[in-house]
Image (cartoon, rainbow, N blue to C red; front, side, top):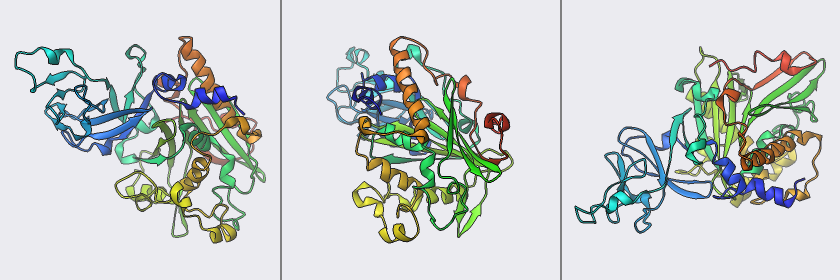
Length: 423
């Protein structure tokens, strides 16, 4: 459990809050690159860490991110005209470039110097891995840009998506880090006793701290072998996990794919889940057909979304279209889609969980250590010390693994070659 005051410290993300300050010391995704498809195209509303912002792709192809409201009369810049290297407010014509400078103020006399005194708040951006990233912290503490293996994988081998989640970012992250729940919440055929994660429903968890967060494994006994799901947690809110397979028409489609998630707070009560996957074999591209099949298996395929949004059709407002007969006869949840099952449980906890009422067990080791790391990071931040997970040199070489292996004294030694990034 957590004390209420610690729960407040690690869940609230508005400007000036402890966790808000910490999140702003990392590069975090603010949009899919595909949401800004062309230079001088339509601006995009962005809400991030409790701040209302607007993004646009400038004439030179770079992405600018700035305050959502014009500093003149606070008119919404979402309706602005994206033109010739800047965004022009349509209320009085004031125009701002990507650095926040006012470059034109046609409502003032031609000889006025007023425009040289007006700026708008902006944040730097970087594009990589099919995502637009931003840094919202103090400029003097800006870390190097992200360097994950999925950001280095070529576009032909990579697929990214995002999903809206109606709860605090931390309980969403905790759901991702929890490996034991997959034996239950994601048991989509209670009559199949041969599935790797249902043969041993009480995995042994091992967690080892690193300079980026930790590496951990859920180890399940399978007769004379072990099923090892080796993950990585990278501060503040990323999980990397190993090989996944898509099921189509009752057949398992094997593919050398690794995937993961980044949970990004929109505000205290909602978050974005950025989902990434990549083929880790250079000779085998990741086809869109396979990626969409996997997304559909998760419940976040194109047909699972409310058109024009990143919100699931199965959501909190309709109880995720739970089928009690399916639940009674075939699955644990009666809910279609692996990630939909996750969201039902995470969102169903309420906007922010009261962690002082929890009773944690041995299967919660990864969650306990993650919370410790976040609280330690807050202490380091307040003491002016380096922040764990901000240096790409600490995490750029890692890769997750999901394999059945002979019993080994140390799974890290047995899988040392597989745990190293190749791109």
